Structure formats: C-alpha cells, structure tokens
Length: 116
Length: 113
View 1 (cartoon, helix red, strand yellow):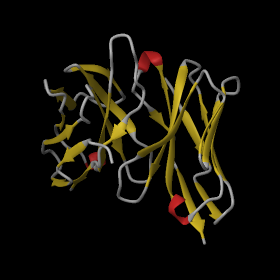
View 2: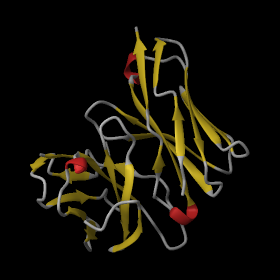
View 3: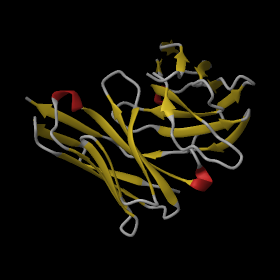
C-alpha cells in the first residue's frame, strides 16, 4: 500500500461554491500531480507541482488552481464549481531530481466531489 | 498533444484464459508507458510499466509489449483469475512532459469462474 493520502474522502458542494482538496505525497516524493476522473473515464491531467511550483498544466480553466507546500503536500482549489466538476479527484506523487527522472507515479485514494 | 486510445472497452474472459488490452499513442516523443489497475472504489495501482528502450517486459502473469514504430503497446495477462477483474488503464508520458500522463479510457475486465 502506497503512502499517498487525500482528504476529504467525499464532498458535496453546490454550484458556484469553492472547494479545496488536499494531498500528502508518499514519503520521499517531491512531485505531486492532480487528475480528474469522471465516471467511466480515464484520469485527466490537471496540473503538476514540483518543488512548490506549477510544472505543467492540462486543459483545465484557471478556476482550477493549486499549491504545494515545503513538506511537498499539495492542495487543489476549484472556484465557481460547475455540475461537470463532479468527479473523483486523484493526486499522484513521484520523485523528481535535477538530473534523474523517476517516472513512477503512485496514486492516492481520491476525493469524490459531487456538485449539485 | 498526446492522445491515447485503448481497446477494447470491455473484456470478458474465462478463468484461466488470457486477456490482451491494446493501446495506441500519437506522440512519438512518448517514452514511458505504465499500466494501472483500478478496482471498484479504489485508487489506480501501478502494475507494470515499460520504457521505450525495451520491447517487452514481464512480471509473473502480466507482460507488456511495445512497438515504437507502430506506436502501440499491449498488456497481456495469462492464466487469468477472478481477482484480475478490474478496470485497466494504459498511459503515456514523454521526458519533456515528465509525470504528465495521458491516460486511455480504460478496459473493464471481467474474469468469470
């Protein structure tokens, strides 16, 4: 079992509200990637944080934002929630170095967000 | 950007038979191809991966093959067991987009006793 944890497990919000999801990376991992997984689909890349900076972004609007903290944990913030934001939000951690790339990513259990 | 297609979307096999899932990718710069298994209500778990410098990798009953020329890779599960029932996802990533996986849509595998 991996060490990636996420909170909360489930969340119900109303359209227009804001939400913050949290992720703690596996011990020793300094990179966190966030994914959105709609029901019956594969995960879609939102963005990645490496050493507290955004390191790439997928096709998601600016109302999806994030942070990474010095302990490498991360937050995903979504403003002005829409019904289509209802999904499982997964974070994945990996280890990045300046000159060595570790590709393996390990996922957390996810946060199930329902927007009504 | 990268686009990954995965087939079939569902796969039913008898216990003991083999299962094969195929994925194609579009970006020739992709060089890392992991496979994840996701059981209902659980997190995706990395089960095997392959890098572009090898053509095949095996781990007990599972194997992955890669054809860089044709830009496709496949997951092979032999001697399937009921606990292999899950959704399997392929993904692709390139060095210059390290860690930013493009996933396939998934294959629901059902192994019947």
